[in-house]
Length: 252
Image 1: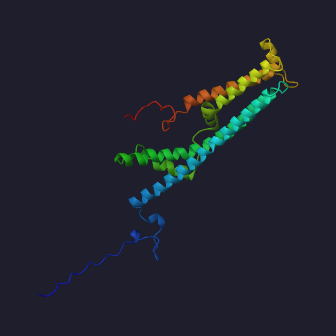
Image 2 (image 1 turned 135 degrees about the vertical axis):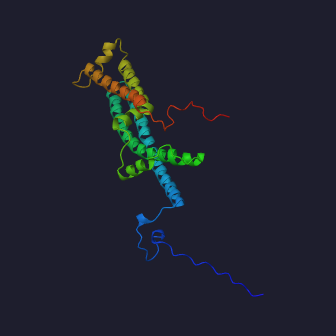
Image 3 (image 1 turned 90 degrees about the vertical axis):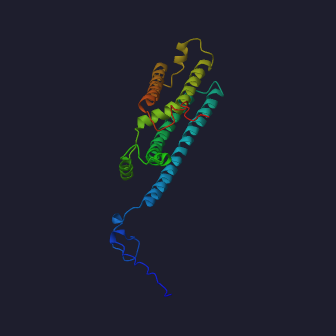
């Protein structure tokens, strides 16, 4: 019986637009090379990991400034109360230093929020549809927002909002601790005061009378409280855990 030989089909030449731009002799520009689904997913996964690493890095930088503020406050309290001869100005100096640390931390928080916003944009519009097996992004134009932010990075919150957020969740308690210690220092040193007027008189700093010092401290604290309260009402981030601690969505 004669042997039948099966002819292999000839491979059709690959169109120019489909050639790999890395091949030698290819004249196709990178922009003309079609991006496959697997290449797109792989690139987005690596991009997500990079943005998550950036967010983690800047989040870790928030804690040192808070620690500096706490350590500075503790050291100033120890110095102020170690002797009745030590001036109450030490505690006002602690207030100034804590305010400087607050400025550092609010700036770092603004940078952290840039990377956090990108991470949440990818999680909401890429990972959630993938996990649910419903490949429809909640926000159809999310890629344009991310691409625009990569091209022209911008802060998502203002400096005032950042200061208010850090005040509300961290620094307001440090401020109140310093205020309580300052009032206590004025009341008991050098001797226990008999009236509020005497406490106000002890607030004087050189040529600056006590009432003026008291007015300055009250204005500072009124501004801090206002910023902290405003941050809780104007900065409503639906993509964060804040305010959702008792939602109880996972139950046994």
